[in-house]
Image 1 (cartoon, rainbow, N blue to C red):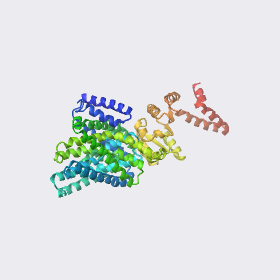
Image 2: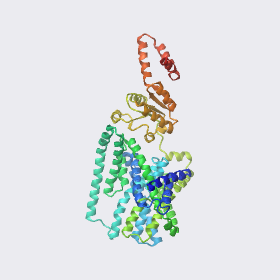
Image 3: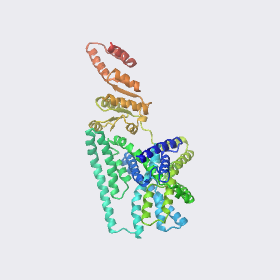
Length: 558
């Protein structure tokens, strides 16, 4: 309990302080880990165990990224992933290996291990910074993620290469060939099973209307795919990413994202803190010159190499600079590779501690590198062209409909008839399925959850229409919209005048009792049948609707 309280307290204080200083939450987590870790106040003594638990944060992070990347977009990204990403790993790894071989005088195989281990960047750092800046779907965000994606794939052959180097054999055995075939079989099976089994499972859970079961199912999907990929030698993060891609077109995507998000935030923060705990000041101090020069040389070389390669891909210089500086650090897979190399006696005595210090220091430099990159990019491009290059085109401002019952479906149909973009949210799986079959833009989820509203673009909505039958749920939506997006008008269906006044007081722009319009429509039919002329009827109803039905309220009270 003392360790848990220490972790929570340190993370809250550090993130608040570093965010206030404009240095970002990642650097705050690193500092918090260093302070309470074994080399600091020793409030937490088992840093390795914390890192293993924290790695699940990277798993959830990659899952959420996969949710945003549809299979078609992933196919479009193949040139960046295998072309730019592959060249980055190869060129950086060979260059660093050659430099280490010449400067440190180590054996060639040791130089290769260190060079390629440092060539890999930190997926957790890169994607977290992109997420904080809301740039994951920007041009430089996509390019950076493509490189990171290939680096995750490159971990597999590197892990296979280390035992072969230890044996002095540079060829695959027959058993290795069978292992590769077995891995491919498992990989294809996971994809096929995932493609055809996920939807029926989610449908069954959604129809049960059990929120707890839905959260458990979301966690099962993330961890299940991660575990399956780990069995064949791929990283757990890669398995989670594949699960996210498979779910990217599901109507349950946004609700799953909302359910997983809290786990991602907590565990990813724990991962960064565990990295900070591995920093040993005494070891770094004893080799201060090597560590500092090594970290500075590393981030400089990686930034320059990636900028040069990105320019070969005709990436604008301002974007290339941001990508290069963002991915200039060494990554978390370096801990894994160097630990395995040390166990196989492939690293000189004492080298492991120095390498860890270099990796941690390069990570600490990342937020600073990103800030420098942003300033350089602004100088390289004018503000207008810079914004155009780094941001996606802003989609049409949609109307959001909370609730797809009878009223919500009618409103969606009316908006669709006049070509006004709208997206509806509903917690009834049957309604969602039927609406999507009819061609409506509809997602499964709780409209009062901030994560759901952010995911569907409530920040750029022109209007929110709440048609929910449940008064308490409608009130929750109004409160959330007022707290997060007070500039977006909210029109609400209410039960009666009292409910309408209450919702208006909470911030709704317009609240109409559900019986009012029905009464007016029935009254119109009665007046017409009684022989009242059209002009007279129109004048009467316009008079009743004026000033928020004030006269109609007076009649009802009387």
